[in-house]
Length: 178
Figure: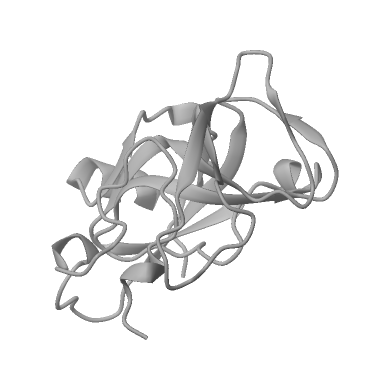
């Protein structure tokens, strides 16, 4: 079951969902539209190693936009800071974004109860496309949780992506033991 617009508003009033900045016109019938933040990043090295810390380079999207190219993996970030304390948030691309050939996540579309931060976007494109900071890129949908949560994500000692800033965050796979 997905929360409706009225249920999302109720949860915002209760403080179990936080969206900053919040704009009423971004609330759909069962989702909330999120926008591309001003920062993008790419990995410094062409070959990545899952056991090593792969560093990224940040750059700001200029007012005239920035052209994304196929075969380049970009990390972006949502303009919105969100908190979800009683629901499972899912981030999906908007159909208008997809129709431009833009994918906003490779695998990480689901958040956890207790996620607090800006969402890092895993961006790839099918053909060159100019993008702009502040453009709508995705939508958050919220699912209720069945049962009690023992430890929320923001309370876990090993949470690698808690309190994400307004800049993209690189993979923290290297922190895992394997």
